Each structure stands twice: as C-alpha cells, then as structure tokens.
Length: 185
Image (cartoon, rainbow, N blue to C red):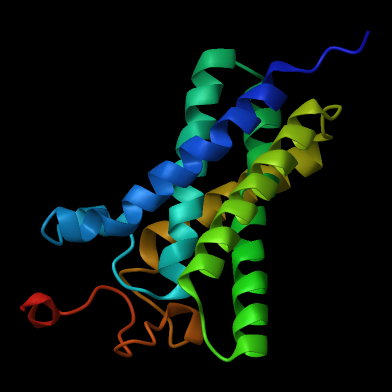
C-alpha cells in the first residue's frame, strides 16, 4: 500500500494555520503602533503587494517549523519551497486582477476567498514537490535562488516600493509605509 509522505499531511495542516497567521498579519502593523520593523512581514497598506506578504511569510514560517520537525535534506527541501512559495502570490495577483477587471471593483468576500484558495494551492504544490523524487543539483540551486530572491523582495520592497500599480494603495495612492501623519485620526 502506498504511504503518504509526512510532508503531504503537514502541508495540508498548514492551510488553516497560514490563513489565520496571514489574516492576523493584515492588522499587526496597526495593532503594534506602526512599528517599522514589523513592516517586513505585516501589511502596511491595502496594496496588492502587502497582501502577497500575508501569504508568503506565514508559509515560510510553516516551512521552517516543518524543516525543524522532519529534518529533511536541506537542499531538496528549500529548493522545493523556492518553487512552491510563489504559487500563492501569483494566484492572488491573477485572480484579484481578473475578477476586479470583470466586476469593476474588489469585494471583500472575493478577496478573502482568493486568499484562502491561493494558500491552499500553494500548500498543495508544496506537498506535491515534497513527495516528488529529488531534484537534480541545478534545479536545487535554482529553487534555493528563487527562495532567496523572494525573501529579499518581501524584506525590502515595502520600504522601497517601485512605481507600479501592484505597490499602490488605491484608497490613498500611497506606496509602502504611509507617512506618520496618515495615521493620525
């Protein structure tokens, strides 16, 4: 009888965890008095970019916990994560911009459904990659490189957002961390 690898169950168990942690990070920056270091992992505005971080960082944290528990081959594990972690953000971008183009605006319930669906897809891809035969060394290097690029991007682009629509909060036109005066009521 075929036995599921432990990662498959682990990745599936991660879906609600990543959704809940990501949802909390949506509000964490405000809850913590706009503490700038938290801007690396928490949403600082309502741009699409900031919502991508809410999928990425909790997924990476869940991966780190799984790595510590299961102690897999580091190259294979982190390269698989390098390929799997972009799945949720890419789906969020595709689904959000598609449905808002069709409907003319966003709807909170569709945003939430998009987030949950994207997280589930990312975790499922991760489970599939973990169950696959090992990647060759070139594929592992590329995967780890992808992971490092994602960490670098999510760590810096909130502080130095480029002038693209993905980074713009359409409510107020701000990119990145809003000026302190924006937070006064």
